[in-house]
Amino acid sequence: MAAKNGGSLALFLVLCFLLTSPPLARGDTPFPINVWPKPTSMSWAEPHMAVRVSSSFCVIAPSANTHLLAAAHRYSALLRSERYRPLVPPAANLTAAAAGGKAAELRRLTLAVSDLHAPLQHGVDESYSLEIPPTGGEATLTAATAWGAMRGLETFSQLTWWGHAAGYRRAALQLVVAAGVRVYDRPLYPHRGLMLDTGRTYIPVDDILRTIDAMAANKMNVFHWHITDSQSFPLELPSEPALADKGSYGEGMRYTVEDVKLIVDFAMSRGVRVVPEIDSPGHTASWAAAYPEIVSCAGKFWLPDASDWPNRLAAEPGAGQLNPLEPKTYEVLSNVINDVTSLFPDGFYHGGADEITPGCWKSDPSIQAYLANGGTLSQLLEKFVGAAHPLIVSKNRTAVYWEDLLLDQAVNVTPSTIPRETTILQTWNNGANNTKLIVQAGYRAIVSSASFYYLDCGHGDFVGNNSVYDDQRSDYDTSGGSWCGPYKTWQRVYDYDIAGGLTEEEARLVIGGELAMWTEQVDAAVLDGRVWPRASAMAEALWSGNRDAAGRKRYAEATDRLTDWRHRMVGRGVRAEPIQPLWCRSRPGMCNLVR
Image (cartoon, rainbow, N blue to C red; front, side):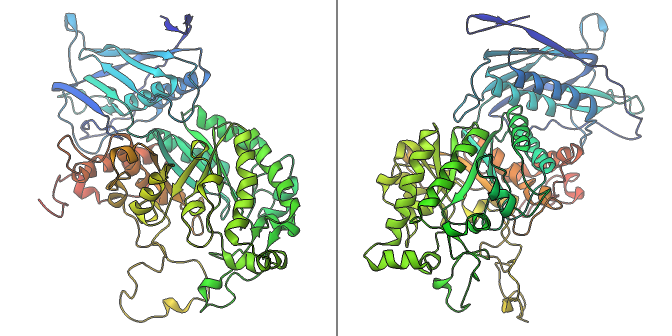
């Protein structure tokens, strides 16, 4: 079978496997259907039926796209190995009969893709349609691009489970799939991301790969990699090897060129873009180990006077900001941008530019002289961004910055420094208010409001020698000692409307959102539980929305589905935290606050 693509016929590869039944488990029953994120449109014919997946089931995939081919291989292997058994018995007949009385079974899934060569980039078409006939035979997955086909493969995988044939509780378990199902699906927002900070805590490559794999399963498509920060510079760069050699936590806690290639390729084979962030000019104390002459206030205690917060040298321990007056700054910066854009092919480059701390620059003698001659800190920032932004754009990249660059009250730049057509701003403060300010200024926005999307919040602060906790009153601080507390529950994440309060024209400038996993108190041991399933909540809200057809928030209906999905993710090796006791899932509605 072949599909038309760009005027030529694409070859198809048939991926088949043999299924074996797992050991018999007494008293088990099949599960209800559950797809996360909920598709835009899905129907399941009444009465609900399921058919056996043939022991020689095949995925027929076009071979002209190596990433799609890898995905087809991966999902074929997943069907063989997953052994997913739902938590609650489904109302589905597993004995649909085909002509001649022989039990119906699904023999193959055929993929048809209109444009196999569409690159993975912002705004690429991720739509797909899936049809599984009520009598089995051949299912079809149709998509405009390979990336949409990958989303459809994930949906197909979630429509399968291991169960008994109806009426035969002691019969061997077998792989079945929902039948009589039609899905048409496409995302609400083109940018659905997770930001992971590896500058404060080194996260091993395997843990990054597992995170990206889970993102793809949740139909998230942007891994925003906050690679460096004041605490460490873990990325090895060919033109600037000293930055990682001297600025990382040490050997074994660096990302090599080979590591980056592995991560980028791994992500691409799952339809996930990798957007690198090299934060500057703030958050750059780690650069001082290699180049002390270009970093202001490096090595100084971050808070000289605990009672004088306005004159702090940094937002947290690890003081240091690049000095825009030092010519060497731009030599190093140019090499960094050149290397990073060579390593990461994505069309976005995140330049950071958040939390410029006036006290740091004011403590530098060369900047003191600049200010004494009539210069301002905002002009100093403009000098830096005015040099960095053209470098980024010259690499055919869109520059992404944190909102501070435009909205910070003390140090900011004028809009002319960051042209709207080549700049995206990422919001993190003041909820919907700052999103509105950004889009009103004509900029595209990525929403990461700390009030909803910061996953580190509510775990207390990490600074030591802190007397704030020595308070014997009960519940003295509802923020839990965290500047952005309390903890953001999955429902808090799910219910956020990232375009709330915007006009229709303003809302069009919101390209999506990102959850932020800052790692002052996170390492590989706790990463999964901090991210999942809260990231799943955002994934659905940005894919198909958080409201039903009548416009009502659907968090109540989503609870059981998220419990099911979390159960499935754990089976796939993701250590996601639970959201309710199992008792609640087996007694629908009994754990609700309101009937």
